[in-house]
Image 1: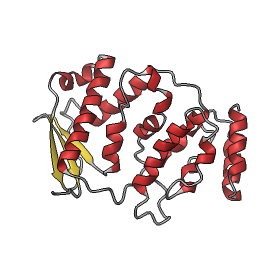
Image 2 (image 1 turned 45 degrees about the vertical axis):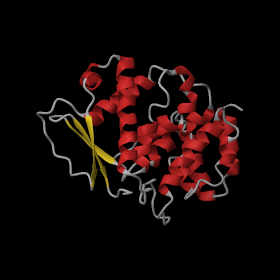
Image 3 (image 1 turned 90 degrees about the vertical axis):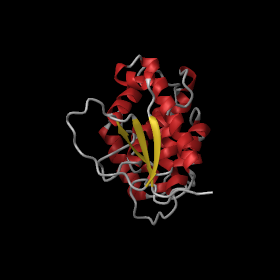
Image 4 (image 1 turned 30 degrees about the horizontal axis):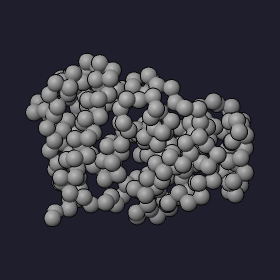
Length: 247
């Protein structure tokens, strides 16, 4: 099926007349980057039941759906129907050692991306990877410090996009879900995670990449509701987690 046929098929699976009206309005706009309404995935909360019918007609649909369902699983606990966005409210409790392992994997992937792009911004990471410190508690409020020459979040965001821009995905109408995937994790329409988009759609890119699943560790930290900040002066990546499992 071509793009229009797939969209028509998807619409035929929806029984919510109000949502169909919204979808028709989106279709009338004829925006090539917006073929599916942003709230699409919210219709299948809390566990994603029924989504398999939408993905079965897609190239790599089974692999991609598996990753989408990870997002539902991470956000289903304490979902009461009022959340528009997919928020991790009750993460699984894990050990400090496990969080350190995931964070090491995360840093390793960042370094791999930087090496692949010969990225000078992360040159310090390549030559001197930061230490990891796991802290039980909440991430302190950010303070603005204009004297800092390195911003980990901004650097990683640009590194991620620059790397993905070097690759051509396999053909699949799964890319029509890019905007709804991006909107899934927006918090009060302020912060969205493009890492979710790239992680979910990664099966379309994996044959092009020498780096294996580069965004998986970030998603694993997100599932645990882990927050981080980078202490540039002491070269430490601080990971904040609200509750830890102690053996």
